[in-house]
Image 1 (cartoon, rainbow, N blue to C red):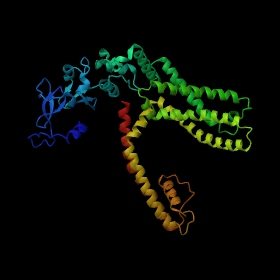
Image 2 (image 1 turned 180 degrees about the horizontal axis):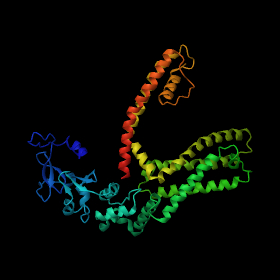
Image 3 (image 1 turned 30 degrees about the vertical axis):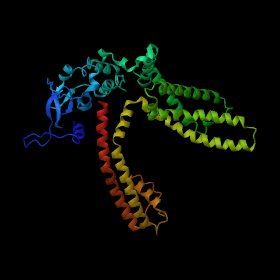
Image 4 (image 1 turned 180 degrees about the vertical axis):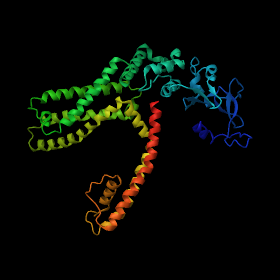
Length: 432
Protein backbone atom coordinates (compact mmCIF):
# COMPACT_ATOMS: atom_id res chain seq x y z
CA UNK A 1 0.00 0.00 0.00
CA UNK A 2 3.00 2.31 0.52
CA UNK A 3 3.81 2.40 -3.18
CA UNK A 4 0.16 2.99 -4.06
CA UNK A 5 -0.26 5.88 -1.63
CA UNK A 6 2.94 7.49 -2.88
CA UNK A 7 1.57 7.46 -6.42
CA UNK A 8 -1.87 8.74 -5.42
CA UNK A 9 -0.47 11.48 -3.20
CA UNK A 10 0.63 13.52 -6.22
CA UNK A 11 -2.76 13.53 -7.92
CA UNK A 12 -5.43 13.44 -5.20
CA UNK A 13 -6.30 15.19 -1.98
CA UNK A 14 -6.78 13.42 1.33
CA UNK A 15 -9.50 13.69 3.95
CA UNK A 16 -7.80 13.74 7.31
CA UNK A 17 -9.19 12.29 10.48
CA UNK A 18 -10.20 14.80 13.08
CA UNK A 19 -8.40 12.79 15.70
CA UNK A 20 -5.12 14.60 16.35
CA UNK A 21 -3.36 11.38 17.32
CA UNK A 22 -3.69 9.93 13.84
CA UNK A 23 -1.11 11.73 11.71
CA UNK A 24 -1.51 9.63 8.56
CA UNK A 25 -3.89 10.71 5.77
CA UNK A 26 -6.67 8.22 5.21
CA UNK A 27 -9.09 7.92 2.32
CA UNK A 28 -12.83 8.07 2.79
CA UNK A 29 -14.76 4.86 2.18
CA UNK A 30 -17.79 4.36 -0.01
CA UNK A 31 -17.18 0.80 -1.02
CA UNK A 32 -14.54 -1.80 -1.61
CA UNK A 33 -15.72 -4.12 -4.29
CA UNK A 34 -15.06 -1.78 -7.16
CA UNK A 35 -11.58 -0.68 -6.14
CA UNK A 36 -10.08 2.78 -6.02
CA UNK A 37 -11.62 5.76 -7.70
CA UNK A 38 -11.68 9.56 -7.50
CA UNK A 39 -14.94 11.28 -6.56
CA UNK A 40 -16.23 14.50 -8.02
CA UNK A 41 -14.60 16.42 -5.15
CA UNK A 42 -11.17 14.95 -5.96
CA UNK A 43 -11.21 13.01 -2.66
CA UNK A 44 -9.76 9.50 -2.86
CA UNK A 45 -12.51 7.00 -2.15
CA UNK A 46 -12.53 3.25 -1.70
CA UNK A 47 -15.75 1.38 -2.38
CA UNK A 48 -16.96 -0.68 0.59
CA UNK A 49 -18.52 -4.09 0.83
CA UNK A 50 -22.13 -4.20 -0.22
CA UNK A 51 -22.22 -0.60 -1.41
CA UNK A 52 -23.30 0.15 -4.94
CA UNK A 53 -23.47 3.97 -4.79
CA UNK A 54 -21.35 5.08 -7.75
CA UNK A 55 -21.39 8.42 -9.60
CA UNK A 56 -22.77 8.57 -13.09
CA UNK A 57 -19.34 9.44 -14.55
CA UNK A 58 -17.80 6.36 -12.91
CA UNK A 59 -15.44 4.50 -15.28
CA UNK A 60 -14.05 1.08 -14.28
CA UNK A 61 -10.96 1.60 -16.43
CA UNK A 62 -9.72 4.18 -13.91
CA UNK A 63 -10.13 1.83 -10.94
CA UNK A 64 -7.24 0.17 -9.19
CA UNK A 65 -7.52 -2.77 -6.84
CA UNK A 66 -4.89 -3.99 -4.38
CA UNK A 67 -4.44 -7.70 -3.77
CA UNK A 68 -2.22 -8.77 -0.89
CA UNK A 69 -0.80 -12.28 -1.24
CA UNK A 70 1.04 -13.43 1.88
CA UNK A 71 2.29 -9.92 2.60
CA UNK A 72 3.10 -8.81 -0.95
CA UNK A 73 0.88 -6.22 -2.64
CA UNK A 74 -0.20 -6.62 -6.26
CA UNK A 75 -2.02 -3.70 -7.89
CA UNK A 76 -4.13 -4.18 -11.01
CA UNK A 77 -7.34 -2.85 -12.57
CA UNK A 78 -10.83 -4.20 -12.03
CA UNK A 79 -11.26 -4.26 -15.79
CA UNK A 80 -8.69 -7.05 -16.02
CA UNK A 81 -10.37 -9.05 -13.26
CA UNK A 82 -13.94 -8.58 -14.46
CA UNK A 83 -13.16 -10.13 -17.85
CA UNK A 84 -13.41 -13.53 -16.15
CA UNK A 85 -16.53 -13.36 -13.95
CA UNK A 86 -16.61 -17.06 -13.13
CA UNK A 87 -13.21 -16.91 -11.40
CA UNK A 88 -12.65 -15.96 -7.77
CA UNK A 89 -11.15 -12.55 -8.49
CA UNK A 90 -13.50 -11.86 -11.37
CA UNK A 91 -16.64 -12.45 -9.30
CA UNK A 92 -17.47 -9.42 -7.15
CA UNK A 93 -19.32 -11.43 -4.52
CA UNK A 94 -16.58 -14.02 -4.11
CA UNK A 95 -13.84 -11.42 -4.19
CA UNK A 96 -15.43 -9.36 -1.43
CA UNK A 97 -15.29 -12.30 0.97
CA UNK A 98 -11.51 -11.91 1.09
CA UNK A 99 -11.37 -8.19 1.78
CA UNK A 100 -9.34 -7.06 4.80
CA UNK A 101 -10.39 -3.71 6.25
CA UNK A 102 -7.13 -3.55 8.17
CA UNK A 103 -5.03 -3.84 5.02
CA UNK A 104 -7.47 -2.02 2.72
CA UNK A 105 -6.85 -4.85 0.28
CA UNK A 106 -8.06 -8.28 -0.69
CA UNK A 107 -5.93 -10.68 1.30
CA UNK A 108 -4.99 -14.24 0.26
CA UNK A 109 -2.70 -16.48 2.26
CA UNK A 110 -1.50 -18.26 -0.86
CA UNK A 111 1.69 -19.07 -2.79
CA UNK A 112 3.32 -15.78 -3.82
CA UNK A 113 5.45 -16.92 -6.82
CA UNK A 114 2.39 -18.60 -8.36
CA UNK A 115 0.30 -15.46 -8.08
CA UNK A 116 2.53 -13.69 -10.62
CA UNK A 117 1.31 -16.21 -13.17
CA UNK A 118 -2.29 -15.98 -11.91
CA UNK A 119 -2.26 -12.21 -12.34
CA UNK A 120 -0.59 -12.57 -15.73
CA UNK A 121 -3.55 -14.66 -16.86
CA UNK A 122 -6.04 -11.99 -15.79
CA UNK A 123 -4.05 -9.29 -17.59
CA UNK A 124 -3.25 -11.08 -20.85
CA UNK A 125 -5.53 -14.12 -21.04
CA UNK A 126 -2.46 -16.31 -21.52
CA UNK A 127 -1.15 -18.89 -19.12
CA UNK A 128 2.52 -18.57 -18.15
CA UNK A 129 3.41 -21.23 -15.53
CA UNK A 130 6.04 -20.03 -13.05
CA UNK A 131 9.54 -21.41 -13.36
CA UNK A 132 11.01 -23.63 -10.65
CA UNK A 133 7.62 -24.19 -9.03
CA UNK A 134 6.08 -27.62 -8.56
CA UNK A 135 3.36 -28.05 -11.24
CA UNK A 136 1.06 -29.55 -8.60
CA UNK A 137 1.40 -26.40 -6.48
CA UNK A 138 0.60 -24.22 -9.48
CA UNK A 139 -2.38 -26.44 -10.35
CA UNK A 140 -3.77 -26.06 -6.82
CA UNK A 141 -3.40 -22.28 -7.02
CA UNK A 142 -5.23 -22.19 -10.35
CA UNK A 143 -8.00 -24.31 -8.92
CA UNK A 144 -8.32 -22.04 -5.89
CA UNK A 145 -8.68 -18.91 -8.03
CA UNK A 146 -11.07 -20.68 -10.37
CA UNK A 147 -8.90 -20.45 -13.47
CA UNK A 148 -9.07 -24.19 -13.99
CA UNK A 149 -12.86 -23.96 -14.21
CA UNK A 150 -12.78 -20.87 -16.41
CA UNK A 151 -10.92 -22.39 -19.38
CA UNK A 152 -10.56 -18.92 -20.91
CA UNK A 153 -6.97 -19.49 -21.96
CA UNK A 154 -8.34 -20.10 -25.45
CA UNK A 155 -9.35 -16.42 -25.58
CA UNK A 156 -5.69 -15.58 -26.08
CA UNK A 157 -5.78 -17.28 -29.52
CA UNK A 158 -7.13 -15.07 -32.32
CA UNK A 159 -10.47 -16.22 -33.62
CA UNK A 160 -9.35 -15.92 -37.22
CA UNK A 161 -6.38 -18.25 -36.72
CA UNK A 162 -8.40 -21.41 -37.22
CA UNK A 163 -8.13 -24.81 -35.58
CA UNK A 164 -4.82 -25.62 -37.17
CA UNK A 165 -3.10 -22.47 -35.85
CA UNK A 166 -4.75 -23.05 -32.47
CA UNK A 167 -3.16 -26.49 -32.26
CA UNK A 168 0.16 -25.01 -33.34
CA UNK A 169 -0.08 -22.42 -30.56
CA UNK A 170 -0.80 -25.13 -28.00
CA UNK A 171 2.16 -27.16 -29.28
CA UNK A 172 4.48 -24.15 -29.03
CA UNK A 173 3.35 -23.55 -25.46
CA UNK A 174 3.93 -27.19 -24.52
CA UNK A 175 7.37 -27.27 -26.13
CA UNK A 176 8.33 -24.02 -24.40
CA UNK A 177 7.20 -25.43 -21.07
CA UNK A 178 9.11 -28.61 -21.87
CA UNK A 179 12.29 -26.62 -22.49
CA UNK A 180 11.91 -24.43 -19.42
CA UNK A 181 10.68 -26.85 -16.75
CA UNK A 182 12.39 -30.24 -16.30
CA UNK A 183 9.54 -31.36 -14.02
CA UNK A 184 6.90 -30.96 -16.71
CA UNK A 185 7.45 -34.56 -17.88
CA UNK A 186 9.90 -37.46 -17.74
CA UNK A 187 11.13 -36.63 -21.24
CA UNK A 188 11.81 -33.05 -20.16
CA UNK A 189 13.77 -34.34 -17.16
CA UNK A 190 15.87 -36.55 -19.46
CA UNK A 191 16.46 -33.66 -21.86
CA UNK A 192 17.67 -31.38 -19.08
CA UNK A 193 19.83 -34.17 -17.64
CA UNK A 194 21.46 -34.64 -21.05
CA UNK A 195 22.03 -30.91 -21.25
CA UNK A 196 23.85 -30.95 -17.91
CA UNK A 197 25.98 -33.95 -18.99
CA UNK A 198 26.92 -32.30 -22.29
CA UNK A 199 27.81 -29.07 -20.48
CA UNK A 200 30.22 -31.06 -18.29
CA UNK A 201 31.71 -32.77 -21.37
CA UNK A 202 32.23 -29.47 -23.22
CA UNK A 203 33.88 -27.89 -20.16
CA UNK A 204 36.18 -30.90 -19.78
CA UNK A 205 37.16 -30.62 -23.44
CA UNK A 206 37.89 -26.93 -22.94
CA UNK A 207 40.23 -27.73 -20.04
CA UNK A 208 41.93 -30.74 -21.63
CA UNK A 209 42.73 -28.85 -24.85
CA UNK A 210 45.07 -26.55 -22.92
CA UNK A 211 47.08 -29.44 -21.40
CA UNK A 212 50.44 -29.97 -23.17
CA UNK A 213 50.04 -33.77 -23.16
CA UNK A 214 46.31 -34.03 -23.91
CA UNK A 215 46.04 -31.05 -26.26
CA UNK A 216 47.56 -32.92 -29.20
CA UNK A 217 44.60 -35.33 -29.23
CA UNK A 218 42.30 -32.37 -30.00
CA UNK A 219 44.52 -30.47 -32.48
CA UNK A 220 46.59 -33.03 -34.41
CA UNK A 221 44.38 -34.59 -37.11
CA UNK A 222 46.84 -37.49 -37.43
CA UNK A 223 46.33 -38.50 -33.81
CA UNK A 224 44.29 -41.73 -33.42
CA UNK A 225 41.95 -40.09 -30.90
CA UNK A 226 41.37 -36.94 -32.95
CA UNK A 227 38.35 -38.14 -34.96
CA UNK A 228 36.61 -39.66 -31.95
CA UNK A 229 37.00 -36.53 -29.85
CA UNK A 230 35.99 -34.32 -32.77
CA UNK A 231 32.70 -36.16 -33.38
CA UNK A 232 31.88 -36.22 -29.68
CA UNK A 233 32.39 -32.47 -29.55
CA UNK A 234 30.38 -32.04 -32.76
CA UNK A 235 27.47 -34.07 -31.33
CA UNK A 236 27.49 -31.94 -28.17
CA UNK A 237 27.44 -28.74 -30.24
CA UNK A 238 24.58 -30.04 -32.38
CA UNK A 239 22.60 -30.79 -29.22
CA UNK A 240 23.20 -27.25 -27.94
CA UNK A 241 22.19 -25.87 -31.35
CA UNK A 242 18.92 -27.82 -31.39
CA UNK A 243 18.23 -26.63 -27.85
CA UNK A 244 18.70 -22.99 -28.87
CA UNK A 245 16.55 -23.36 -31.99
CA UNK A 246 13.70 -24.94 -30.02
CA UNK A 247 13.83 -22.15 -27.47
CA UNK A 248 13.86 -19.54 -30.22
CA UNK A 249 10.87 -20.86 -32.19
CA UNK A 250 8.76 -21.50 -29.06
CA UNK A 251 9.60 -18.30 -27.18
CA UNK A 252 6.40 -16.30 -26.58
CA UNK A 253 7.86 -13.14 -28.14
CA UNK A 254 10.73 -13.17 -30.62
CA UNK A 255 12.35 -9.95 -29.40
CA UNK A 256 12.13 -11.05 -25.77
CA UNK A 257 14.25 -14.06 -26.65
CA UNK A 258 17.20 -11.79 -27.40
CA UNK A 259 16.68 -9.86 -24.17
CA UNK A 260 17.29 -12.98 -22.08
CA UNK A 261 20.92 -13.09 -20.99
CA UNK A 262 20.98 -16.90 -20.80
CA UNK A 263 19.91 -17.21 -24.43
CA UNK A 264 22.72 -14.91 -25.51
CA UNK A 265 25.22 -16.91 -23.47
CA UNK A 266 24.00 -20.12 -25.12
CA UNK A 267 24.58 -18.64 -28.57
CA UNK A 268 28.04 -17.37 -27.64
CA UNK A 269 28.97 -20.80 -26.27
CA UNK A 270 28.45 -22.57 -29.62
CA UNK A 271 29.75 -19.75 -31.83
CA UNK A 272 33.47 -20.76 -31.60
CA UNK A 273 32.73 -24.26 -32.89
CA UNK A 274 31.09 -23.07 -36.11
CA UNK A 275 33.64 -20.28 -36.61
CA UNK A 276 36.38 -22.91 -36.26
CA UNK A 277 34.77 -25.09 -38.92
CA UNK A 278 34.55 -22.14 -41.30
CA UNK A 279 38.16 -21.14 -40.62
CA UNK A 280 39.41 -24.69 -41.20
CA UNK A 281 37.50 -24.84 -44.48
CA UNK A 282 39.02 -21.55 -45.64
CA UNK A 283 42.51 -22.73 -44.69
CA UNK A 284 42.10 -25.98 -46.61
CA UNK A 285 41.08 -24.08 -49.75
CA UNK A 286 44.01 -21.65 -49.57
CA UNK A 287 46.87 -24.09 -48.90
CA UNK A 288 48.35 -23.57 -52.38
CA UNK A 289 48.21 -19.77 -52.31
CA UNK A 290 51.74 -19.21 -50.94
CA UNK A 291 52.35 -16.11 -48.82
CA UNK A 292 48.73 -15.05 -49.08
CA UNK A 293 47.72 -18.32 -47.45
CA UNK A 294 50.26 -17.82 -44.68
CA UNK A 295 48.92 -14.35 -43.95
CA UNK A 296 45.31 -15.60 -44.03
CA UNK A 297 46.21 -18.41 -41.62
CA UNK A 298 47.58 -15.88 -39.15
CA UNK A 299 44.39 -13.83 -39.36
CA UNK A 300 42.23 -16.93 -38.91
CA UNK A 301 44.36 -17.95 -35.93
CA UNK A 302 43.70 -14.59 -34.25
CA UNK A 303 39.97 -14.93 -34.93
CA UNK A 304 39.93 -18.42 -33.45
CA UNK A 305 41.80 -17.29 -30.36
CA UNK A 306 39.23 -14.55 -29.78
CA UNK A 307 36.28 -16.88 -30.40
CA UNK A 308 37.63 -19.56 -28.08
CA UNK A 309 37.36 -17.12 -25.21
CA UNK A 310 33.58 -17.32 -25.57
CA UNK A 311 33.66 -21.04 -24.81
CA UNK A 312 34.18 -20.09 -21.18
CA UNK A 313 30.55 -18.93 -20.99
CA UNK A 314 29.40 -22.55 -21.28
CA UNK A 315 29.85 -22.89 -17.55
CA UNK A 316 27.11 -20.30 -17.06
CA UNK A 317 24.64 -22.71 -18.66
CA UNK A 318 24.58 -24.47 -15.28
CA UNK A 319 22.72 -21.48 -13.84
CA UNK A 320 19.67 -22.28 -15.96
CA UNK A 321 19.36 -25.66 -14.23
CA UNK A 322 19.81 -24.48 -10.63
CA UNK A 323 17.02 -22.71 -8.78
CA UNK A 324 19.36 -21.58 -6.01
CA UNK A 325 21.78 -20.00 -8.50
CA UNK A 326 18.88 -18.18 -10.18
CA UNK A 327 17.76 -16.87 -6.78
CA UNK A 328 21.30 -15.70 -6.02
CA UNK A 329 21.48 -13.86 -9.36
CA UNK A 330 18.16 -12.19 -8.68
CA UNK A 331 19.28 -11.24 -5.18
CA UNK A 332 22.48 -9.70 -6.57
CA UNK A 333 20.44 -7.84 -9.18
CA UNK A 334 18.15 -6.40 -6.50
CA UNK A 335 21.20 -5.25 -4.53
CA UNK A 336 22.78 -3.44 -7.49
CA UNK A 337 22.43 -0.02 -5.85
CA UNK A 338 24.40 -1.21 -2.83
CA UNK A 339 27.00 -2.84 -5.10
CA UNK A 340 27.35 0.41 -7.05
CA UNK A 341 27.84 2.24 -3.74
CA UNK A 342 30.61 -0.20 -2.79
CA UNK A 343 32.37 0.23 -6.14
CA UNK A 344 32.08 4.02 -5.93
CA UNK A 345 33.52 4.11 -2.41
CA UNK A 346 36.33 1.76 -3.46
CA UNK A 347 37.14 3.97 -6.45
CA UNK A 348 37.29 7.13 -4.31
CA UNK A 349 39.38 5.39 -1.64
CA UNK A 350 41.88 3.93 -4.11
CA UNK A 351 42.42 7.13 -6.10
CA UNK A 352 42.75 9.31 -3.00
CA UNK A 353 45.14 7.17 -0.98
CA UNK A 354 47.02 5.95 -4.04
CA UNK A 355 47.84 9.54 -4.96
CA UNK A 356 48.95 10.34 -1.40
CA UNK A 357 51.18 7.24 -1.26
CA UNK A 358 52.74 8.17 -4.59
CA UNK A 359 53.85 11.59 -3.35
CA UNK A 360 55.18 10.07 -0.09
CA UNK A 361 57.22 7.25 -1.68
CA UNK A 362 58.06 8.39 -5.22
CA UNK A 363 61.22 10.29 -4.27
CA UNK A 364 62.88 7.41 -2.35
CA UNK A 365 61.13 4.30 -3.74
CA UNK A 366 61.32 3.44 -7.44
CA UNK A 367 58.50 0.94 -7.04
CA UNK A 368 56.02 3.80 -6.66
CA UNK A 369 56.96 5.52 -9.93
CA UNK A 370 53.33 6.25 -10.94
CA UNK A 371 49.93 6.80 -9.38
CA UNK A 372 48.63 3.69 -11.16
CA UNK A 373 51.12 1.47 -9.34
CA UNK A 374 50.26 3.20 -6.09
CA UNK A 375 46.56 2.50 -6.72
CA UNK A 376 47.43 -1.14 -7.32
CA UNK A 377 49.20 -1.23 -3.96
CA UNK A 378 46.13 0.31 -2.26
CA UNK A 379 43.80 -2.34 -3.78
CA UNK A 380 46.08 -5.19 -2.71
CA UNK A 381 46.45 -3.70 0.77
CA UNK A 382 42.81 -2.91 1.66
CA UNK A 383 41.65 -6.33 0.41
CA UNK A 384 44.31 -7.90 2.72
CA UNK A 385 45.81 -9.86 -0.19
CA UNK A 386 49.33 -8.44 0.19
CA UNK A 387 51.25 -9.80 -2.81
CA UNK A 388 54.45 -8.07 -1.64
CA UNK A 389 55.45 -6.99 -5.14
CA UNK A 390 55.20 -3.33 -4.11
CA UNK A 391 55.69 -2.07 -0.56
CA UNK A 392 56.70 1.22 1.15
CA UNK A 393 60.23 1.63 2.52
CA UNK A 394 60.15 5.08 4.08
CA UNK A 395 58.97 5.71 7.62
CA UNK A 396 56.18 7.97 6.44
CA UNK A 397 55.12 5.45 3.82
CA UNK A 398 54.98 2.60 6.36
CA UNK A 399 52.94 4.65 8.82
CA UNK A 400 50.57 5.74 6.08
CA UNK A 401 50.38 2.14 4.82
CA UNK A 402 49.22 0.95 8.25
CA UNK A 403 46.65 3.71 8.32
CA UNK A 404 45.38 2.72 4.84
CA UNK A 405 45.15 -0.94 5.85
CA UNK A 406 43.17 -0.22 9.03
CA UNK A 407 40.88 2.34 7.47
CA UNK A 408 40.35 0.22 4.36
CA UNK A 409 38.94 -2.70 6.36
CA UNK A 410 36.43 -0.40 8.06
CA UNK A 411 35.71 1.40 4.79
CA UNK A 412 34.76 -1.84 3.02
CA UNK A 413 32.90 -3.32 5.98
CA UNK A 414 30.33 -0.51 6.18
CA UNK A 415 28.66 -0.98 2.75
CA UNK A 416 29.25 -4.74 2.90
CA UNK A 417 26.88 -5.11 5.85
CA UNK A 418 24.15 -3.35 3.86
CA UNK A 419 24.75 -5.62 0.86
CA UNK A 420 24.69 -8.78 2.97
CA UNK A 421 21.46 -7.82 4.76
CA UNK A 422 19.76 -6.88 1.48
CA UNK A 423 20.98 -10.08 -0.16
CA UNK A 424 19.76 -12.23 2.74
CA UNK A 425 16.33 -10.59 2.68
CA UNK A 426 15.86 -11.09 -1.07
CA UNK A 427 17.25 -14.63 -0.97
CA UNK A 428 14.90 -15.75 1.79
CA UNK A 429 11.92 -14.04 0.14
CA UNK A 430 12.55 -15.74 -3.21
CA UNK A 431 12.97 -19.15 -1.59
CA UNK A 432 9.50 -18.97 -0.02
